[in-house]
Image (tube, rainbow, N blue to C red; front, top):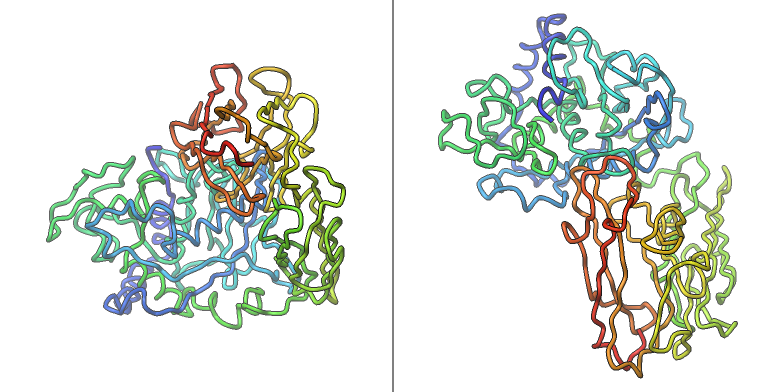
Length: 556
């Protein structure tokens, strides 16, 4: 997308017109930054409390809590240099790529001290063509919270610049009006799931401005961003041109650092902050007059993000198991994953398990398939309580218990999903996150017949794994064995990270061996789909056949 991706420069000129001393104040601050301090060695991680205000015009702009949380996850990955694409940093810049030791966390207490998700929702037509006008709708104290307003689109008041503005933020400066402090960002640039159509780097970029960073191309070849380790750049970078070297006045003469989050290169091209950028951001966080109070111990308590802090909130029940597909007689470890307030009492429900109930925080349970069926699913529930309140999480069919040496299929297996909902005696749905996104029977799209199974991966979180598991298949008399199926998958714009994996287990799901992995061009029947996609013709469906001769005589 060419043009003005970030509105920071336009707004900064307006602020300097209103507050003429800002340039001098910033220069004085930069002179205090210790760029020679050891980098990546402080072992002190500064955590910034965040509140996200979703300002939506229609429900299509009203993004989910899950998408907000994904945006914060991606933001933290970028600031801690835990992003998956660090290996894409060219060798000439690897030595200055920094772990900023800065993290962002959704607040747990609101300004009144009440428990909160730190996600607010306000319906307003101001979401379309938004600017600072949305900040009057709702704002939390900006000395205590980083306010992020998520909107439909952005139009900067009084700006004659062309191009689409994806987001903007103001740099810290005690001399300016703080009423507008925070980040405004379009909903389709907030996170990597849901309506998100990118890798989330717009938020990374705007948070950099919020913490005091300039564009590396500011002022062209002979000005810059006050960072000696970002080579001078004549103008904003677009696309992903690794051959660009627009300035030759640096020594040694280095190419444009298109990998820098503060440039305008594509999301799949940017992947780093530098040591000097880290120094500026951390110096702003160390200065009480700028951003320092945000990370103070007092504010960590005020906003509820202090580690281990007892919150005046009911716990939110959640759990996981170390295995969900098991053989008859297997013992399973369950772990309490509840959030919000600290639970003081736990009440577990394990139909089909021994024990069938437990009050331990992290119990172990043994499952026996007493029904004698080859395949049986069992529900699991957890109720957590403290002095404030009680919540429950109950997942249908969470555990799948198999009977070895007792199989429905002998040497032949065929399923078109025509007659039964899933899960059933043929298929187990593994949804370890316990969310609403899982494999489901689908009557709207199929290659043949009336039904298929579908996973809503458009709204899925990165790194989630959802599995569709067959019952046991006895192939001890087969002469040859192949597993064939058809699939239809599309990618979102800027994404090529999905993976479809076919695995075989010979020990009731305790271990799995991958036999075929499909990803990238081999996986996608369609690409760059900004909205949920459905196959419209038989040409959208691809067939794959996996040879399984190595498993003949065994029971995968």
